[in-house]
Length: 461
Ligand code: F0G
Image (tube, rainbow, N blue to C red; front, side):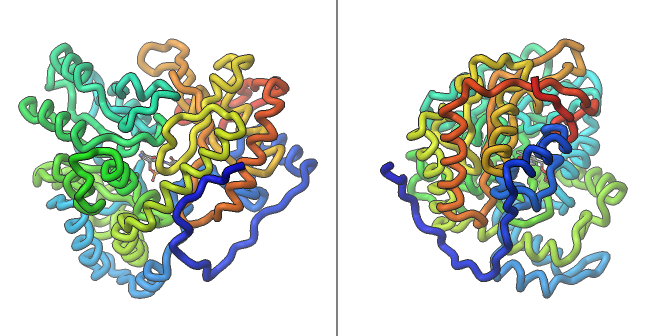
């Protein structure tokens, strides 16, 4: 095995946390108890946890020490002003509020925009909570990612781009008055963590501006997207990652951010807007649902950790290691023969379960079947991004729907696992892959009416 090399971890480990070790029998019993849904397995019973890169990062000594100076005042805390300075430096957005996490920001923002029945919110691709927050208001969430974004082996550099022709046609057909916003998710989590180019964002802005439709960034992974732009978009090669991030935000009318990703905090979110009137409506909603505008559901210490993390996440040595680590895991899996979404994304490696397990139809959840087997074999927790997450009954048409892509996501927490942890993960996946035709599908025995993947229970077929 050649062993794909990447920049070594640009940090030392100062505090350690024991890892959960279990026997195969224990894991079999735990799977049964959890209704074959890894979300319902206690984290102590997980050996390597790649469920998500959200809120699972390791904070730096700078973040921990900033937390001790958190100002816990209800209104106008010093920590708020610290965060405000950083948010303005990084994003340039004139108005912002904190929120406790990304989906809270989505709820407040869509309420302030009066999103409701008869409206459409197009995106390159909605993340599940964004889609749900649009649909729960009776509006329709539409995905318009470029066609190469749906082709796992297409090596195009910006497979997260929005299809501008399709978006232009859609605006003409539906009328701008029915489109309260267009969302660009950077990077495109649901589509394999693929980046969006600066040019695509600029052209989207040019398309929307004459119609008065706001361009909204779902900016959870803004730093990784900016790093990919630096690596892949020749016009931006000489810019720093921070400059690219700033140029990206400069094109947007607003952004929503789950700060639990690239800002490397365990909890937190942001809403940024350019328009003062919209900001006032957001403030009213925020006070009702999250808290006063200078803390938005967070403690003062959380605001401090976020202020430090927003800039740490843009460090280019860190990003080279981060994106390199993901690519290295992808390389190991490909050597073992597993079909992946290529090129690998920033925060996660995505395995193409449709190609890997053709004998399991989508209605029997092939990607989820692989996820269950990863836990059974190695105590590794991954997540399905396929027909459990995005399937089910369409709330508008009532028809059974299946997503185009059927993926297993191995999300890498930031600064948490070393390369030997990831070699173990690759070995577990390779072992299952060698006997993939022995895997069987599952059926759902319980599901919630929305966001069913979190709590669904299954039984093996
Ligand atoms: N937008 C994107 C692109 C996300 O990936 C997430 C969360 C959210 C919004 C919602 O933010 O969790 O802070 O409420 N993604 C996590 C994941 C949960 O595992 O990909 P949140």
